Image 1 (cartoon, one colour):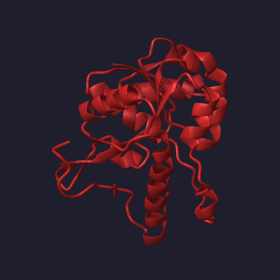
Image 2 (spheres, helix red, strand yellow):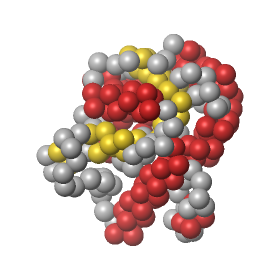
Image 3 (spheres, helix red, strand yellow):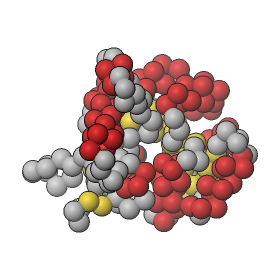
Image 4 (cartoon, rainbow, N blue to C red):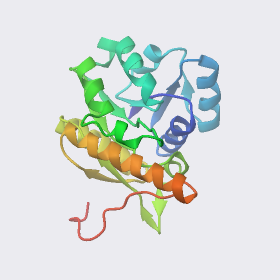
Length: 211
């Protein structure tokens, strides 16, 4: 697949490096082109001079940036995202007031409203960057949960995730993104409160139909 990863931080670099190793054509973009160049060099991907340039030829666009920046980036890209699968990896975090992040909405749903003709899928957000590069836990592939209203888009992201070493779990429609963001928030809070090493991930145990 041709992937555009918007974001040059730890998440963007981890996903880019993993996807490159899986044989995908990856282009990285960032608000500062020099950061995209550095991330591309570190991951083996290509760098784009702008978000629009990266998105142009992509089959799948991955938003790997702080949640506060996502709406402005999506709004700026606008029609360039129409018809494309857009993976939202973002999470809202407020460790001092976690309840403010659990307001019955999700970042992904908010982004879908901005570009209704894009095919938004929540995925990878419950996994820390330190695990994304090598998505295994206890000798098993790490689970990534997918939520989105377009079934074909979910299937595309599942195929991508499996190729990168994850076990994809199709969680259904876009409102489930609220649950996935809550799962991520809980994991983050557990790491902070217990001083864990940011290696934990959610695993669906028991019979799951051989997914």
